[in-house]
Image 1 (cartoon, helix red, strand yellow):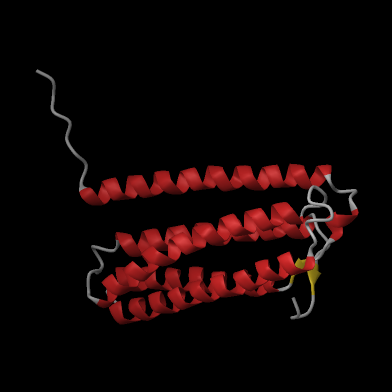
Image 2 (image 1 turned 30 degrees about the vertical axis):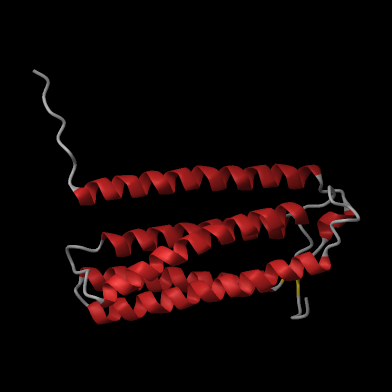
Length: 201
């Protein structure tokens, strides 16, 4: 008689599913950045490649770093049963994430306003910059909803030093988004005209 398969504890299954999800995103974004670099190298001689990036890309970077930092603080606090500090850090992270989306939306609008894609839609790298930045922003939006859920659950006392996987997974996801954005920004900066200083679109 075959031995029945024992199910994993719920928390362990959640961890394994979370790690598999993050691993798939790592493959997706690393492939995307590599393809972008190959695309940019092929178009390095085109004049449109030297179009500057919106300076607001740098401002949004500061806010996503705040998200990662606050979630790191929240993880340390919840494992030590400092729940008030964990809750405060989570809410700060959520507002910083919303600020990132607001600034990033302005940056994308600024990019669309300053690049005439109708004149040379297949030249330069700004089209790919726009696509990758939007893809990243969509994943950020996808991370804001569960982060909000974690904030509400923390405020209701659902986490403690033993039950805190939701807080830790939210932190891992946002650390991942942070690293991806930093790699993207470095790739954009190295393959374009740098950053445009100023606040006008």
